[in-house]
Amino acid sequence: MKCPKCKTVDLRATRIENDLPAAGCTNCSGALVSLLYYRDWAERHGSAAQPGQNAARDDVKDTTTAISCPKCGRLMTKYKISGCVANRLDVCPGCDEAWLDGGEWDLLKALELSHDLPAVFTDHWQRNIRRQVAADTRRNILRGKIGDSALAQVESFKSWIGDQDRRHDILAYLHATE
Ligand SMILES: [Zn+2]
Ligand SMILES: [Zn+2]
Image (cartoon, rainbow, N blue to C red):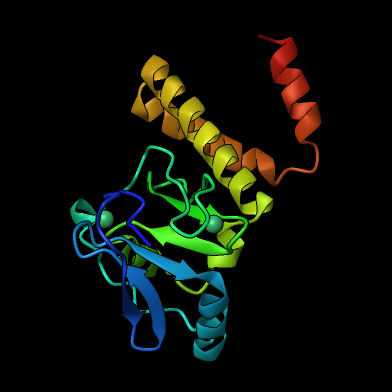
């Protein structure tokens, strides 16, 4: 199998954890991990939160272009890891294999997601990330218009009104008296 990024470099048997085998590229440090082995590994290690290591984020690579599965040649599907990092994991739906770019396993550990990969690959997770990113974008646009301190007021009002039983009446009142 060739590295899907470097194309000409052969993947070699390696381990990303003592007991989690992978096929790694010595050139780009990427690794192909069988999700079958991964699930077994995650089960054996429980979902005890890993100590939040500070991954050197600068060292983490991410393939932004589409890559083909080294096993079957099919285009791999990209899954966002979280709203706060741009990294996406590539997964082959046919082979049940995930491609981790160099440093991405450590990034998952730092985000305490190394035991939760299957959750990352669900529609629910991906929808939540899109929602979070959209909310961040809207907040940034508003910040640009009204500034930091006014935004802080808006956020505090927002969390206050979220707890009010009569929030619809309050919002209707504000809207009508605009
Ligand atoms: Zn490579
Ligand atoms: Zn494949």
